[in-house]
Amino acid sequence: MPAVSDIITALETAYPPELAESWDAVGLVCGDPADEVTRVLFCVDPVAETVDEAIERGAQLIVAHHPLLLRGVHGVPADTAKGGLVHRMIRAGVALYCAHTNADSADPGVSDALAAAIGLRVLRPLDPKADGVTGIGRIGELPEAEPFVAFVERVGKALPATVPGVLGAGDPERPIRTVAVSGGAGDSYLARATAAGVDAFVTADLRHHPAGEHLAGTGEVPALVGVTHWASEWPWCGQASAVVEAATTGTVDTCVSTRCTDPWNLRA
Image 1 (cartoon, one colour):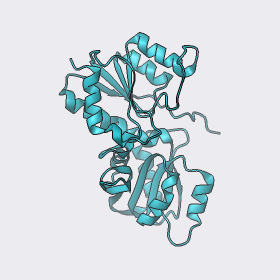
Image 2 (tube, helix red, strand yellow; image 1 turned 60 degrees about the vertical axis):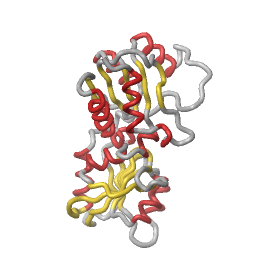
Image 3 (cartoon, rainbow, N blue to C red; image 1 turned 90 degrees about the vertical axis):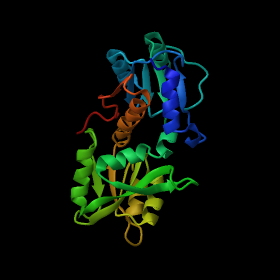
């Protein structure tokens, strides 16, 4: 059977660690690289709910998008939230591997999965690296233009349901054909989306002032579609699962987490 190290090799071929931002923390968080793997759980967030799911499903490895220990720590005592998760995984024989901004920039990566879910044909990165192929975000196009109100509905149907849902800001009848997407928090790319001349920009965690100032800009600016952070990155789980399936030729069972880890669970 493949080992944890074999799964890591496949993931790091698809999502090279050198693509990660300098502030990021990617790679193996806990677990023995030599341990055998028969089942892998893919998720956005390494939290209690997904650790529970991994143990219930009999997975020996969790592949998560978000890091568990992003900032420097001096210990992982079991009586802290994150330390408790580390202890629980080790006791259950579950390793944790995280692919974060390296998966964001890879080709294909997080935003490619988001674009595919929406039905876009990817043209190029929104914020390309030197090679012009990798980078944050993607610019794509729909098969044909559709009214903005229909496009917002398209995004809502394409992504997993969340309590906050999907929000649109723009003329409901505006034709939408070219679209920029950025999985995760993307309001720092508003200017790039505008410069690209796209009709709409889909991303998460849009803040009041940056969004308002963008919409008040001169000339025609992209309409905005706001989704939750978790929903925007969840399609990547299926993409990463396919990477491991291809590399292990059916010897490892892969499963995508079915538990919504979006923190917003009530709406008044």
